[in-house]
Length: 168
Image 1: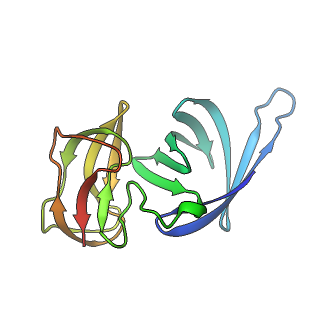
Image 2 (image 1 turned 90 degrees about the horizontal axis):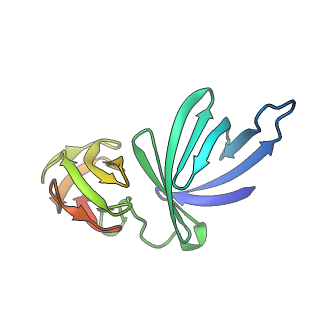
């Protein structure tokens, strides 16, 4: 299977291949993302959750789909993928180049806000914690900058695509 997705303003081509298992062994998968090759096994998969072994390490992916957008949370990081055809539109959970808005990837409740207006943040720094569908989502700074505004506080219920923080 071949596909392409845009995440964080960068286009990624992905090719996934499945090799059927032999002698009762499970199927083996490989994925090429850009120029990187990954091998993985699928332990189990259900609605919104897939448990894998990637390069020998366990990982649980939580995912949600809305049209051409995919939200994937793994190891506390949430990634928003979108089909290239709609890549010019604003994406959830990412900073809009024009507005520098960090948005909620899905409906949930704010559990903790770890920055305040005027704070300097580094790329990848956790800005806040959301709880959604009984999982914790770490909302992280997509780039270094200064927090211009924090628009939510602990305990607030948020909707998907709601602006949480503005980073300059």
